[in-house]
Picture 1 (cartoon, rainbow, N blue to C red):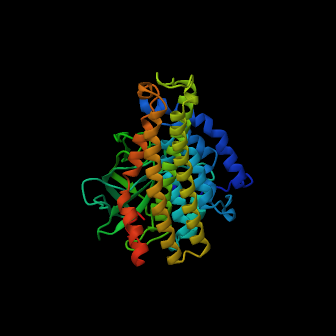
Picture 2 (picture 1 turned 180 degrees about the vertical axis):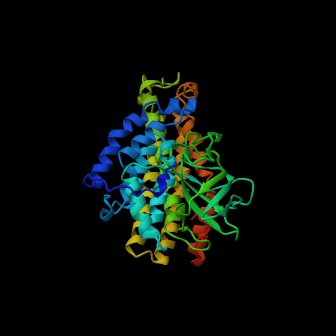
Picture 3 (picture 1 turned 90 degrees about the vertical axis):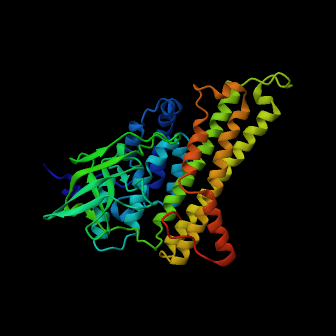
Length: 406
């Protein structure tokens, strides 16, 4: 069969879009993504169309530099976009994480062949490609890899099972990693229709249920030599990709808080009725409903503000030429933003239920999805570790761990 990964995409004839034009496209898409989001989550209907629309609108290309045909947007531009998407559907926003992170990895990479990879993959993104992830596994130590890839003539064969394969069911290409004969991690990218590459819809978390983060099986799958790539993440060394991955999660939390606010306002306006002993005739006139909505609003505002400030720190590290000290500073700012954004999202999601009575718990409204989603995202990285790392930095100047989580 023809191997799509060996075909160089032709340049797009369309004039490059500006950051403003891409963000305007996003705003046009948001109402359609928002429509039915609560029902999709309740009934577990995967948002294939939403992810496809985002890719076709070229929103993934926001960070691609102008010399490659992209708009050359900043990290802050991307994070602001993600907050907006998460404010209508946090599942869709998180499903985009591998695709955006791959671009950051291409930008950071100084490895041999990196420029050719940038040219190849930026062109594919500009044609609407979607990438999914199949890196993490379960059953061993955190971050351990048991999947194997071995030489077979001029190419390779890979076997193993991955979990937390975020976004893979929506993707055209799957990024995976396995250990070679020397127990060294080897990264590779496969077209999703490759024989032996099996994607399962078995993610059963209580929240973020539509991120397509289930199992990917590598069943004696062939990996061509040109599909193997140099890893952009080195053990014991921090790159700007890891703070980006973390602020991405924080942006999802900020969006969840904003979504909770929108639902709280809508419920108070259109569904709630004042408690019997309230002096208000409408819930919107009840001072305690106003207090609840005001607190949710403040928390949504805070979460968004801190993630945008943390994104600016990553942009400053880029401006400083990826100076290690600036990268560490960015990691600390992101850790602080994650701590606060998670707290704000969880509390905002809890307070939604204070704008009405027992009717707020109705399954039809599905208001509990906000807390379930916020709790699930928060559990990616323990908040106490974030705070402790920041405290150690403040007390002793010790940089945060280079575990890939800071």
